Image 1 (cartoon, rainbow, N blue to C red):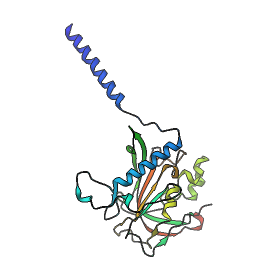
Image 2 (tube, rainbow, N blue to C red; image 1 turned 90 degrees about the vertical axis):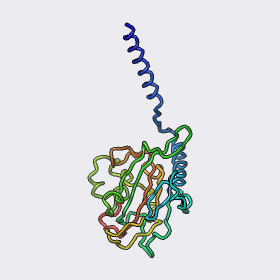
Image 3 (cartoon, rainbow, N blue to C red; image 1 turned 120 degrees about the vertical axis):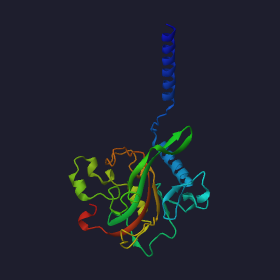
Image 4 (spheres, one colour; image 1 turned 45 degrees about the vertical axis):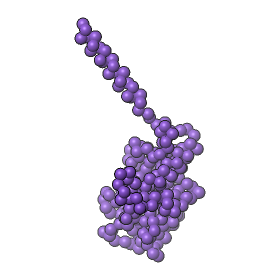
Amino acid sequence: MKKIFLYILAGSLCFTACKKDGDDVATFTEPEDIATRNSYDEQAIQKFMDENYLDVQGNIKAFSTTDTADDNYKKLSQMNPVKLPSGVIYIVRDGAQPNPGKPITNDGKTQIRTMIRANYYLATDTDGNVAFNPAYSATLLNTVNGSGSPITDPLFYYVRKSVLAAATTDAAKQRSYYEIEGLQEGLQYFKAHDNKPDGDPYNLQGVIIVPSKAAFARDLHYNYNGTSLQNRSFVFNFEIFNAQTRPTLEEKN
């Protein structure tokens, strides 16, 4: 009888402990107020720029807390970031721009071929600490560490007319369902190479950071990877291997 009592007591304690552990796991709740969301994004972006730098090939890297090898690198926030009225921030990396280079327009008429790393992040408030939460962050596209080859017109940059024509819902017939407007806006401040060979080593030209309000915000969007991209901010790290006038049949309506 004493053993049975002890087993019951142990089981009860285990249940209580497990319940307490579960209660300690906080789930982030998206604020209803869009102004709060925008404030989260701004604070997290600033923190991101303070905690990261560009290595010798232009890759975004986080500063190490144990290795002094990166102590002489400038923070992204020290690399003359320019903030546009939309909230988009672009950082042009010194010495990595083609000269004279080819222009990239923001009117849908420039087709690009790019080596790119595109990550998305959700800014959250955890006990007063606003930052990009790794639990809600991931990669949208990475040709730098993935295929190793440039891609022409990634869908989030430009959607073909044929895709829009084949859409079956009103939302999917809109360019904003696929395209990240903030990326298009930021790219016009960079120049493209003149058909740089795909096999040449990459030398990333800079960074474009897009807050959620200049991306998909809270709107419906294309299912890129089975995860909601609403309220996500995006960070693009890239090199434009070529830019040319888009074929007329593929230009925006």
